[in-house]
Amino acid sequence: MTLEKMKIGQEGTITKVGGSGNLRCHLLDMGLIPKTKVKIVKFAPMGDPMEILIRGYNLTLRIADAHLIEVEVP
Image (cartoon, rainbow, N blue to C red):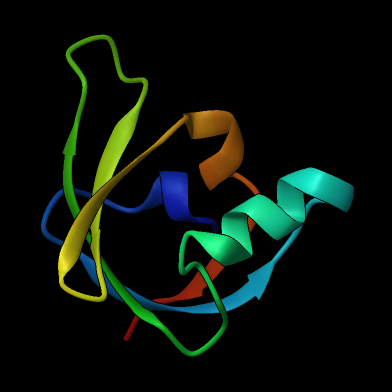
């Protein structure tokens, strides 16, 4: 499953970070690395962007970027 398909309040663990080049490096620099736990906090009223809780801080991601992050949900 990818990150944007998760529901508010749902938790999971990142398994793979897609993308290429600078975008992939940017996602990894923000802390979106495999084996990291994430929790969905909320979605904007129009659905984009979304807010996640990762490593103790809130991070806002565009849905297009969240589509590149694969997660495992227990």
